[in-house]
Image (tube, rainbow, N blue to C red; front, side, top):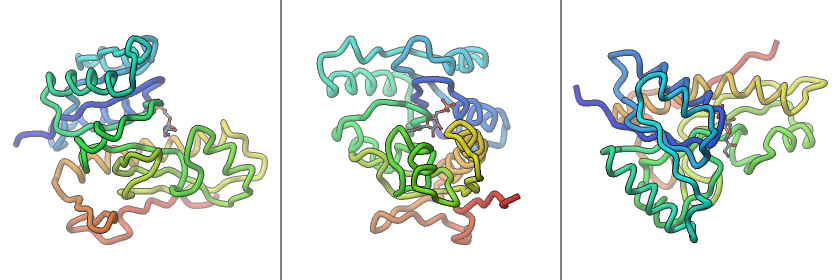
Length: 216
Ligand code: GAR
């Protein structure tokens, strides 16, 4: 069985990358991580990759004059490693429309909210400030606009009295680690199709894309 070759883009800790690495350790998993690329040299996720013998590269956005030039550099690395699909895992840079279009329906992102609510970098602060009872995470296909695109899987968690962004973030992160390998599996199995910007999961009930963490 030939596996889907994935490039994972990170900027930091890489706990989602770790969940993907762990899933790919299973010989029956239909994807493999071909390369990990960070725009920050000190991203801990690079170490996680190197420990498993996965090529881990740095491409520093500060060394490029324009976003498009940076994205060309990124594309070159992905091409070199024969990548079939790209997963953003805590990659904190906007990608240019040309790059996003080139990876149409092969570029995934994970975001720590129930999209389309609370886009951007302050999802947990905003969820708490809004007083929502439920938050969660979303894995979606990437479109040119930030944190927008057809949703593949979401998980819901309760927002509890006294939650801080850190406590809510930890609860959500645990669910992210379930969702991203699941979405990658479906992608690699060729089960995802997008019609009218909505995702269908072949052979799955609608509810399979919704993971619920019971309120305790
Ligand atoms: C995750 O919570 C991810 O959803 C978020 O950054 C964190 C990265 O953690 N991404 C975004 O906010 C993108 N808009 P990790 O480095 O431990 O995987």
